[in-house]
Image: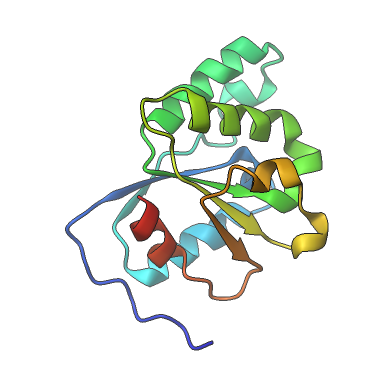
Length: 146
């Protein structure tokens, strides 16, 4: 499939929350590169990996901090291939995105390594699914859902 042309509508600024499942493997950089190359106007509202919440053992504290970050988001991106490794965080992010706000936050799930590493519980919450690391239409999906 040929790459999509750069997204041209600059009338909306999208706030994007990248799941903690992206944060420790530089996958977040790839996703942000896709968005940069697309021309979409966006702000990353994810928590930086240096944030103290990631060493927090009390779920209620982590939940509150993650909730505050997701509250700012138009869309939530989750890497489903890292579910086993980041189950605690992804489950919190899914619960927050689907139950904590008047309107559910749209969830975009990415199969970074293909569907063989997919967790069905994450897919059940997905509003859209992107496959692999090819030039997938991140901007198009965000603009449709955000």
